[in-house]
Image (cartoon, rainbow, N blue to C red; front, side):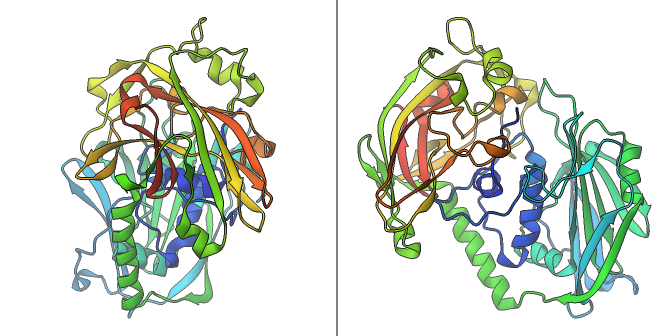
Length: 468
């Protein structure tokens, strides 16, 4: 069974810290839907952001787009320019649009071809509005971006187009009058040879882009055939470009988000037994959710008789048990240190031993209205720097199956009410006014990282140290 989260949860977990501008929020949400998540829930809960690393990293990658090309370089019939820039072995798209010369129109894209076994999923399902192959567990998504969305990405630096190693650019061609580039995604996992494949299409004369993403064993010819058989319609309805004032505000918001998203004042840490609440959220939206960590135990092994197999988030038999020794300890695993640019250094693989962090806690709705409440804090590592705790990412696991267990989310949650749709919404519970919930969580973290580990309840605030 797959471990699925709602789209808002994934945005909390997988997005970069930079705030998504409101003008492109819809297009960025569609990019995160590439993770197989729908619908767009508007849940009023505490908010989190993850700086990096997920099994489907390609969907959350953010690369800087600049406007280095001069308008004078534009061909007469090309009001948008999209080129790949190479630098130090990597390639990234440079895009330039002149909003005074090009209207932005809404775009619709319909594929006339889809490989056998792929079926479009209904909206309110884990793979809503994507094509899913049940036999191969493959997913194909198709996203479009109009000129206004692309322009906003350029001006703010918030892009859905990743930076790639040059060696991962497999083919550049022309499809239906569009520039087309086929890339292979990351393959750092030793237990998964499947490489995500992505085709990026740019229509320079009409100002739009299309992204086809496939996570399966499809051949290059198959994914390119999808691109060759797209029915693309430029709608009559236009979309407004953001003003200079709006762009300035977006950039300011981004800078603030970057400064706040991965750092926490040491004064915003809590002790075991203290009430943890976010007064700013309470004041802004009237919700009053309080958390309390009653106990944290860090130990080498767990007794499966003490913890019900049904309460593990992932299927115990197929995903948890294979990583446990007979005595309940975790098997050793390989991991890669991260380079300065955040990519794994696969030449320096090292062995590591995991531990369990068992957390007993409470959540209390002290407000007057029912609240769909996030029950689980996220587990991060922090370093103290001049009175500030700075979030750090040091390693990524070499095994995809182990990475899915040892991330920021717990592997075990004793209180589970929302288990439908493959546990898509399991981390939430609707708390009625005055209602209290008591439950136990289990996280996995490498033994040499526990001294820097914290449970984080709110974005930029509300930390509880795992091990003193």
